[in-house]
Image (tube, rainbow over all chains, first blue to last red):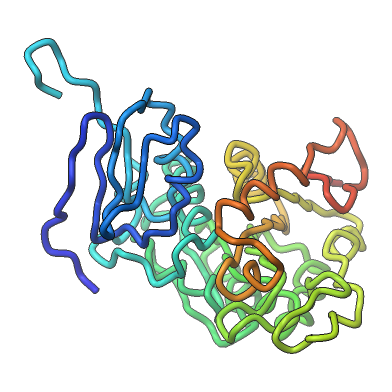
Length: 76
Length: 244
């Protein structure tokens, strides 16, 4: 299955790829801050994320990553 | 960027949600990027089975061989083009069951190959039958009363020759996995990396695991580093043993 343009979902700290994600829940279960949930077929950052990066590290599908922190001007 | 080594246009990958092979693919790509391996100097040979799909996701020339025949093909590639880094990625069934004879003799001949064995202890693609590395008494689709035999001892098989390199690791222990792959590639002979990996859908759930993460936690809790300089790895020890 080819993905033409990745539809990435950006939250406060996390960027999630709904096309590559298989909802295996490794990220949700691994997060030590319980900052991720699966709701209505989407992985959502619900808060408390302090950028440990475990979700990114353990995802077998490159579907979730911790984004660069925003600068003071709000840019990445 | 290691992602440049991967055919991202084919994502999402074909593997089940939570499959360990995805993580093996990522870790291998990271090591290849560190070592400067790409389509100009490296090839990946894979067999039949879920793990066999891995070569298709890399931007390198590769061969998707007949079931069990990764090693003769890899050995031939290395003979014809010795400047290529030849990496075999295959599963426990492809390498140690149908491919077992080739494993025996290829290890004996000691060609300069790196073999990464994704060991999920079952025949995953066909539904989860007992295979050569399934632990005794494991209930699988083809062994509902428990697997009746002891598994093949891959470590002893590899150590039968005068020179050997055998590494044991898991997909949870990513740093260790990468170091095993790195050392295996650098080894001037037959290097075998035995990588314990989760098959949640066709094995793990039947064993009582509720999720892929539970299997990863099991690997974390169960597998420990072997002592420095150990000449033999215990059943739940990760490390490298080598000679020659």
